[in-house]
Amino acid sequence: MPQVMEFKLPDLGEGLTEAEIVRWLVAVGDVVEVDQPVVEVETAKAMVEVPCPYGGVVTARFGEEGTELPVGSPLITVAVGAGSEPEPAAAAESSGSGNVLVGYGTDHSRPARRKRVARPAAMASAAVVAPVAAVAAPAAPAPAQASGPVPVISPLVRKLARDNGVDLRALRGSGPEGLILRADVEAALRAPAPAAQPAATPVAAPEGATRIPLKGLRGAVAEKLSRSRREIPEATCWVDADATELMAARAAMNAAAGPKISVLALLARICTAALARYPELNSTVDLAANEIVRLPSVHLGFAAQTERGLVVPVVRDAQSRSPESLSAEFGRLTELARTGKLAPADLTGGTFTLNNYGVFGVDGSTPIINHPEAAMLGVGRIVDKPWVHEGQLAVRKVVQLSLTFDHRVCDGGAAGGFLRYVADCVESPAVLLRSL
Image (cartoon, rainbow, N blue to C red; front, side, top):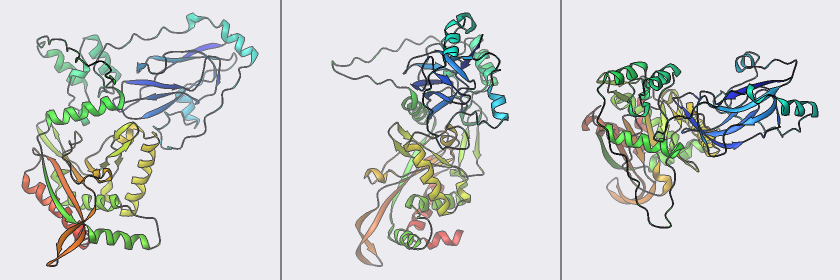
């Protein structure tokens, strides 16, 4: 008789504790192979195909499409044929099977999905008679909580909070990027119980209004932006710059042999040079320690609009990349964002954000800082405008640059100096060459 193995929603990492079932890739009765993707789920950060570590016949699925499941809940059960041992994830990894969540590994390519295979008669009959008792009961559903991911990774921390009735969503983590640590839960247990808050009253809506759940990516964005506005005393300064020489320099670069270089890559290179001069803007504020933490590397986020909403992929170690390397990395991450294949690791760890809202045809903006970063450079559209050049009125390519910054990490002098240096490099790329 085959052994029925239960496969649970794995820990997705990056502090994610739940995922929504978007699409089942297998049906009950299908034959699956080890590492075959069985379900596509959406977390607050990315779309992910989840591979099954067992090979056999699918005997049950848990959850309909659109259902949100906590990590550790059963996904499917698989009847593994008699005479063959189930191959767990660890064994599969050691044998080089690549048993990782698709989109979480080092290779972002997506192989063609396997077609469903009709189950052999012997296996089918065995699956039908497999005892239901062999399947563990589904885990108890998580208590009702607000939408958005909980920044906690350790299962011990989750268990400590659950056993003591601590709502993790009400805690502010003291770890990196707001990660909730054991000490945060223990501090909450020692704190006096807050006064009960009245239950929120649903907003009255007129007939015909549409309600859209604030969850998944939209919920994560809402939570992060709300936290930024609550915690960060932000200010914005801006300046118009003549980008004619920058555009001419880019045209000359692209006329030469080699890959094309984007305007965004040139602006990113200018940003990293400016951050080397004004490192206070490449920092974060540690509220628990009451300290400003200046960061050694520039992990540059850039805003990208997708069908799922706004995402901010991160270019690692941007300060050590050439314009050609930056352009290639922007292109790679943009394509992954467009196709929904960004891994959560591609969307976390940023230290400074470059926001090119000019692609939407607007000149300026006062964006909200991407918590826990300390600053964001905004770039408007580059358009022909009248401009005084060398004492004469001329038509030049003008762009508005804006810097939104956390006033806790620096004052206006540093912010203005940063922005003025960026504008000088845009107006005269030779200024950048002097600092390289």
